[in-house]
Amino acid sequence: MAVESPVARPARRRGAELEAAIEAAVVGLVVEQGAAAVTMEAVAARCGTSKPVLYRRWPDRAALLRDVLLRQATAAIPAEDTGSYRTDMLAVMRGWAAVLTGPGSRVVHAVVTAMATDPAFATAFRDGVIGWRKEEMARLLARGVARGDVRPGVPVDLLRELGQSVLWHRFLVTGDPITDDVVVRVVDEVLVPLVRP
Image (cartoon, rainbow, N blue to C red; front, top):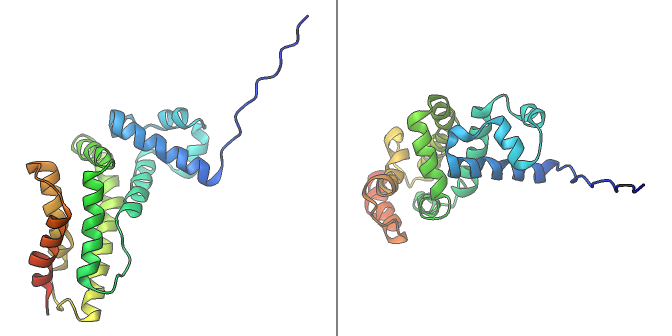
């Protein structure tokens, strides 16, 4: 009688390794099938973990999506103080340009598509990722006012979106190139003159 050797089970991932696998699973599902494909079951199966592991970290798929996309955004779009409004905006705009022209553009397309058809996802994305960006841009403008390179009383609600809106318009509507020259021109010819004291 032959004795079967035990099948080795893969080691259980924990910490950063598990987080990276979950993030990769979510992003892969969003890109390949859309945000609606991101279910706790699908993510668990794709990254080789269990649903209870996911539910210990996130109460539902909307929270999971929001957190993963927020991590992606915070990694891609700088928020550090570079010393001036101009260089802060160049860093932010270059971050957006890299996302919109690089491999991350597939995720952005999938997110935009999902927002049009999935109200829960749209709310989670707006509250998480877009909310974070609005707060960061308001802080960036406040730093500029404190340094004296942004005039007090600028319309923060408009200026926090103005530069990026050119890039998003090119990405979603016109298909015109998003180049570093465009980034520099928007910052130097539009944004800096608008905020100059």
